[in-house]
Amino acid sequence: MAEITTVEEKLAEVTGLAQAAQGAIEKVAPTIEDEQALSSLETMKSEAEQTEERCTSVIDKRDGSKTAILDKARETKQEATEMMSTYLGDDSDGLDGVEFMTMAEAG
Image: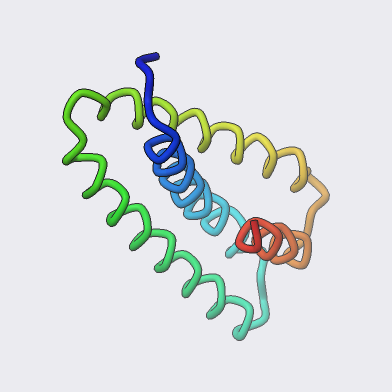
């Protein structure tokens, strides 16, 4: 991977986490019955989508490091997705999902 600056690395991490959050919400939402919790998840998903769009817009303007930044974003997304899979095993319920999303958003 090409060298990226600390700022570009953080940009990649935010992008990857925003992407992972969207996937996590898609997995968790069907297990939630509480309408207020579902509404909160949808708000979180919308915010993650907006964050990804803003980050992608900035990344698109980074000549020479765009590919390396996107590679780091994919790596971050994969790591976050693996953490989610570990945390939310087959016996997880909606409350576990909301707990995971709350922890992820706090991070």
